[in-house]
Amino acid sequence: MKLSSPAGSPPTPDLVPSIDDIVRFFSGAALLMAGRAEGLKRLDLSADGFWQSFSAIVVALPPIALSWIEFESVQGEGRATDMGPVAVYGAHALADVLAWVLPILVLMLVAKPIGYSRKIVPLVVATNWGGAMLAWVFAPYWLIVLLVGMGGGTALLGALVTLASIALTVRLIFFATGKDLGGAVAVTILMIVAALVSYGAVMDLTGIPLI
Image (cartoon, rainbow, N blue to C red; front, side, top):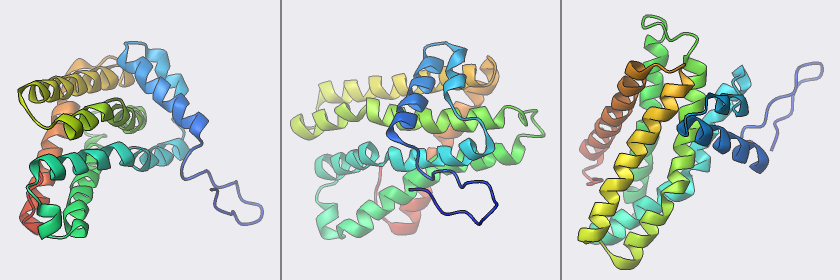
């Protein structure tokens, strides 16, 4: 859906890109993770593309919601029934949105002092679309746990999924920022810490266990 624009003004960009654009953005993120810097050429690094990349949160919602369902069904011990699904899943949604946006806000605030003024757009666009792509790539894991339950095998698989996600994120950021390894590791650590802080804050606010 495209918003209308006042007469004589430039057209307003789509808030959510087309399926073809999403596939192109995913392929760009995949190329970066594979070590091919030309993946950046498949991403929209314009000002409109920067803001549009936040729609990756919406694109990633189905597999992320699947992880909530898995957690509450397998590990939640009936909380969704006792406390109400709106409260429980609302807490999950709030925590994940905070975990997604918080590190970006921090990076935008410190971009100039740390010399990332020119890197912030490719970094944010790449991590937004890369994060959405990884959410879909690892969605089968949540289906497996829902079907067979949590045991030693699925726990090991979950650890491997987590490690793979971290490694691929480091590679994505490394090539998106012009092969800055120290920056890639630091940004990835920031994302992990932001996720823990976000989940901790929401759990303290709502009293609902999320991890």
